[in-house]
Image 1 (cartoon, rainbow, N blue to C red):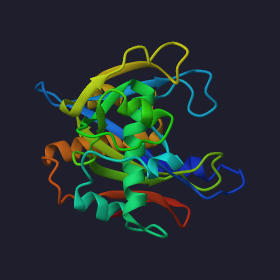
Image 2 (tube, rainbow, N blue to C red):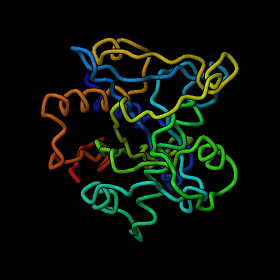
Image 3 (cartoon, rainbow, N blue to C red):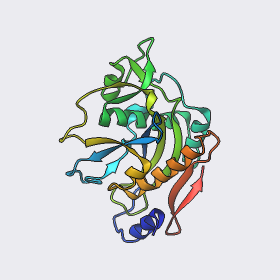
Image 4 (cartoon, rainbow, N blue to C red):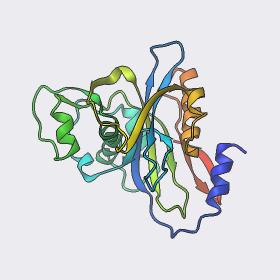
Length: 242
């Protein structure tokens, strides 16, 4: 049974009340400095109600502040266009907020900043974005690649409409120490080859995304590559294209 079949089989057993999925975003950082590319994964705290002890990419749901954060550089137009497909009330502001979520969640969970130096001081929303900007950088969306989208099947306790982005590790401009520790959301970070990562305790969708990233690495991450959209249709987990 492959990962898509496993998700489909599991979804048939769920009985939670259905709910609208929340916009969310995840960032996969890829280190291509060596002969074999590596990706960054974090181990979730064992006490979390959601995916305890699993290895995941940093990410989370969109916050209202993500829609008001200034950026150093905007999204690539092709990425922006794909983010606005197959959604209600599409807008550039919503597309940008989704991409910003991936950068903010990565900063909050790992202490890693993806951005460019600021030459002025535009107003930033309070909270994590204010702390992000205090290090002298604003988020840079221009280097983000959209590689997949996935909606959690119906009847799950938590449902997300998640967009998966990648960025090269050379775009890390600053690191804040002490963010990852035994009492944090992520208790451990690991740089691993994709083959090594696939042997970890992963959510099914993480395994699917890793395989997609591996295919895109072989294809050279060309911007014209289509983006798979994983979702339930007629009681089966299917892959459409954006």
